[in-house]
Length: 132
Image (cartoon, rainbow, N blue to C red; front, side, top):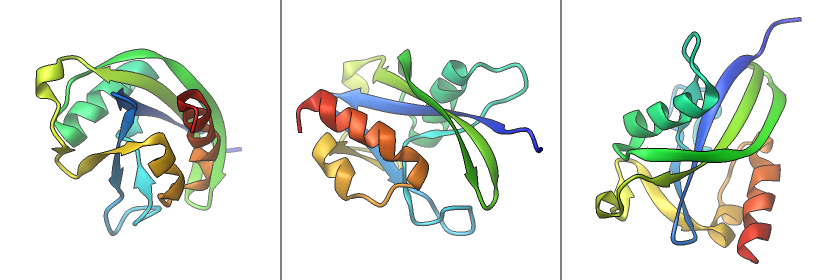
């Protein structure tokens, strides 16, 4: 069995909205919605990875608060160990309507976006927490 890739995912929340982008072409799951995140570096925790990837992909500095969900998932392109980490912006003054290719969406808005199958449970969780 192939070992899974460790993935840190920043679920960035501010004022009841979440930061979401769309995967570009020429990558697995192209065109799907995504939270900022990516592969953990050697000896990097999923929390540190989520913070680093969010800064690289959005330009926004965030603070990792807690693990929302951890799950293993097998895609055609490989097995991934997904760590969904709830994060909040470090500085309120840095918040913009758009951060590079990422925009803010309500929890209800997340339900209409085309996320990968592995995100379904965390989308449900965020909707329940927000009462939507």
